[in-house]
Every structure is written in C-alpha cells, then in structure tokens.
Length: 172
Image (cartoon, rainbow, N blue to C red; front, side, top):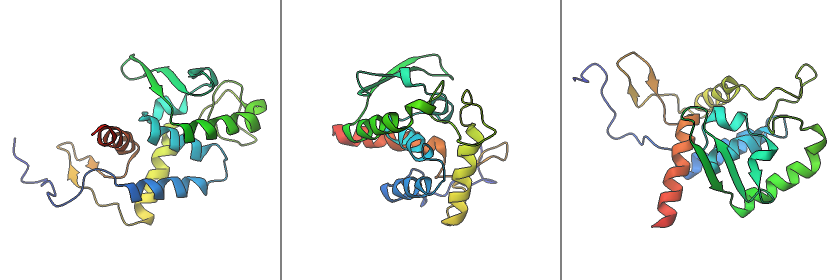
C-alpha cells in the first residue's frame, strides 16, 4: 500500500505531550459549565472514550470515588479503573456541591433547555478540541487516511492514548 499521496510526517510528534494536556485542562476550565473541566479531566486521567465519559453516572464510581467501573460502549468490556487521589478529591467535591442537580448522568450541560436526563454530546467535545487546535495552531494533520480523513495530534482519542502512555511510563 503506497502512501505517496499522503506522506506521514516523520518528524511530527503524533502523541500529546504534558504541555498540551495542561492547555486542554486550562481551556476546559474557561467554559461556563462547572462540570465540563471535570469531564475532560476524567477522560485524560482515566483513559476513557468520549462517549463513555459523557454517559458516566454517579453509581459507576465505587468506594467513595476510589474506583470507576463501567461497561465500554464500543466493546462491551467492563473496565475497572482505580482513581488517583487528586481526581478522587475533585470528584467528591463536585458531588457534594452538585449532587442535588445530578439525576441520571454525572456530566451534563447546564442550560435552561437541557433536561437532567441528558448528557453531553460527543460533538461538544469534538468541537472543543477543534477550537483548541485552531487557537493554538495545532490544526495541521500529521497524516491523512486513504479515505481523506485527516489525523490530528490533539483529539479526544489522543487524550485517551496520553493516559495510556503516562500509565505505562509510570510503571517503568
């Protein structure tokens, strides 16, 4: 299979770096919705797909937020993930302050027109990342698939891989 029409930029870093993760979290905090930054942080620190993170419920967290247990929407596998102490503290505080507003989903838009039974749409997260790429000049794809789809370094999917790399590097 030839890639002459779509060369891979070999000098281009394909995965996120710590600075980009910090930018993502900083920009998420600027959103008006208080639970959006926590949603992005859960995706980053728990290695979650955006669809799974959007649909998290309070009862997915066990033992005072020390463990997350959920069934992956894409694969059907049940994942059990330990939650780092700093994220656990933030989740507990979030729960204390917003538990009266949480009915079905943990993370949901806070608007007049939004029912408590709605969760964030994955398109909201994709748009957030698209805006970040443009704002910080990271909107050049490192590769284009055969079907014409560009691959970017800063996406919800690469945020998941960032977690995997950090966890692997922490284990040595």
